Amino acid sequence: MHYEFFPYLTNSQEEVLSEAVDLSELENSIGILFEANPDFFPSIFRWIAYFNDHFLESTTIHKYCVTSVISLFRSETAIVNQSLYELNLSMSFFDELYSQPYLIRLENQKEGDLILQIAILFGRYPGMIIRSLTKSLILLKTQKHNRVFELFELLFVKFNTPNFLVANLPYLTTEEAQVLMHVLQGNSLRSAQITGYKVSKKEAFLLKNVTIQIIHTDRIFLRSLIFVRLYKARQNPDLIRQILRSSQEYELDCKRFLNGINFWISVLSFLTDHEDQIARPMTHYIDFFDRKRRGQNKLKGGCKLKYRTIESVDREIGEWHHAIIEIAPPKTNFEWDHSEIEDAVIISSGRKYFFKELTSEHDLYNEGKSLVHCVTTYSQQCISGQTRVWSMSCKRGKNWSSLLTIQVTNEQVVQVAGMCNRKPESFERFVVEAWATKFELIYDC
Image 1 (cartoon, rainbow, N blue to C red):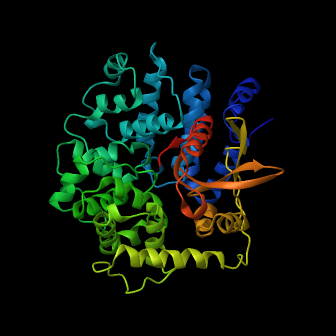
Image 2 (tube, rainbow, N blue to C red):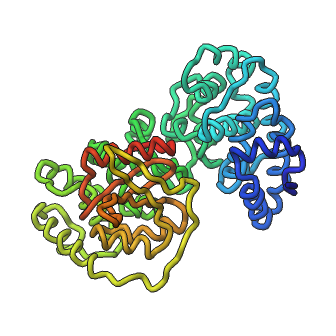
Image 3 (cartoon, rainbow, N blue to C red):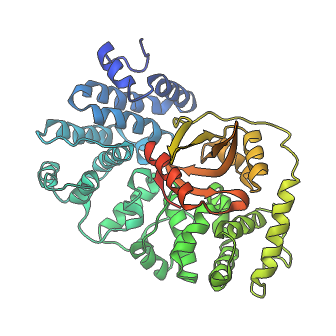
């Protein structure tokens, strides 16, 4: 089959590549990008043509970097604004890789995203390279793990690094990449120009020294700043991560989340102060306050939590959960495409568990009504592709009965909830982890 945008593929190459990459989907993506931004098309074409020419030299670089090129051109990353000179330098980076007897074998898509971003920075900041690529590759032979990440450090890192940016290197926007390179020259994070955001001395210190785990691939600087502003108020990193993982406002509109940071600081303080009195799963409280913040339920006494008791909030959550049962079905039934992860059956201790992706508003509504939780409110995130939701059910007699709802964001299982948002039992967790392992997902909840 001939693909218009892949003229360099032979039939045999196309056959091998199609086992790993959906060529028709990639071609369709390029067509959409061309209609939206015709000026970007030549650069996309040159990148893909380049990897096509070197396909036989490294199938893994081709497999992951072609996909990465498409993904990066959809975002605001530095690849979009490459000059022809920078593009040629970036390709010379890969020329050097291909010429080495020790060739890096990429293991997954994240490594593909990372090595392409390193090549882009190699082209944009040639004056900041602290050792040659050839020497870096020789030193890299001694590394057994994180080889691609080590390559970035060997090329660019001389002083302490801003870990929150380096850890998310593949997803940095042009501006965030500029901040990273500014700091790598030994400059202060505070002296970097971040449009719209001022960083205090303490926040700059925390950004560089606190472990910040982000499951999202957009607005890395802003999401990290939110984390440290919460951390500055109350040093409870595990609870902060729970709040950020569960909050739809943080996921959908993190700028609004930052603007309402005082509300979220009060939530963090309230939950920290009452942590030993909390009987419900923590996600009950986070979901409740999140809906309050987004105007989907009304918190008695307003937003002030200073003089509230955990008992009064528990009563309101109970009333809210009861109200969920009475919610009418959605008037529309938007549907979204199934992800690449197929529906599957996992067998554990002789019992079958069925994992089915929910792909419509009615699916979410029925799941929420069955298990009495608020998954129905996740429709916008699913429609936009920011998150995916699965239902895990177990066969009882002739019927399948829903046990758990599973949220997956950026290939990570970030939330698992049963009836009334209960936590999964140990045997259920084992089944979910087996499913996650089967499809190479990270279990992070």
